[in-house]
Amino acid sequence: MFVDNKIENNVGILTIDRPKALNAMNPDVLWEIDQSIKKFIEDEDVGVIILTGAGEKAFIAGADIKVMQQLDRKGALDFGKLGQEITMTIEDSPKPVIAAVNGFALGGGCEISLACHIRFASENAKFAQPEVKLGLIPGWGGTQRLPRIVGKGIATELIIGGHMIDAQDAYRIGLVNKVFPLEILLEESIKFAQVILGNGPNSVAESLHCINYSAGQSLINGLDMEVESFSQLFETKETNEGLAAFVEKRKANFRP
Ligand code: DAK
Image (cartoon, rainbow, N blue to C red; front, top):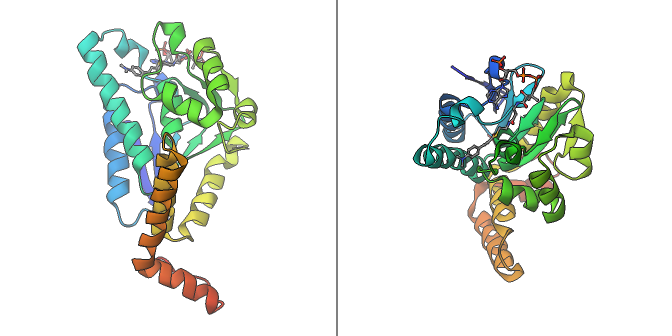
């Protein structure tokens, strides 16, 4: 087993644990991540998912280079599709997924973090899309998601330079939301997860949906999607509860 899953107070914590290869992803690791994320999405006890790496050195040091060395074109296509499917499952998750990046997030590891809705990093975290150094290109969405997050110019520099940046630089360019000392990274990620859990689950899911799918849409189409999501919420108990709680001067109870 390369992935450890636990649920603490409605937060599903998925820890990638393959220390001898700095949590690099071989097909087994990828498959376990895929299954674990899907289970957390289906589990009613889970409202927010945190993805992190075991140990103090790596979040995920990328796809397993030794495995990639054995791939032919067909194998690369299958491996690439599995990775892309996982990043889509994460990005499309109606439950927020937080990457708690606790060390190296390289190549496919950086791409997994890019698919998460929020990235928190430890002070020792390092990010790179180093594929060009291996004669590759990012293949799990790096060329698509990185420019959307940090802008085309910076993303291009990172992808064709292949160099590593530290957590502070990642923060400066907007790649990570916050930086914490390693010892409190998970604790702070859980704290933010608890903030989200206090909010309406449907409102959170609809927000994620609108934010994700506004990219590439015209403003008019994006606004149409937003107003549709907004109005749908008026058929839910959650919205009744949220509005009533304000009027009655009490805290909303979205998860009775
Ligand atoms: N794969 C396999 N093993 C890895 C690994 C990786 N990505 N990263 C580290 N390891 C292993 C090392 O080989 C070493 O194992 P032993 O030699 O002891 O057996 C062990 O982890 C410890 O690593 P080091 O001894 O190198 O540790 P250092 O502290 O000296 O250096 C490092 C840490 C992270 C700087 C270094 O290990 C490193 O540069 N690792 C490679 C990082 C990298 O280039 N990652 C990106 C991989 S490319 C696709 C789509 C996407 C992708 C692929 C295909 N398709 C569409 C088909 C994704 C591509 C990538 O992710």
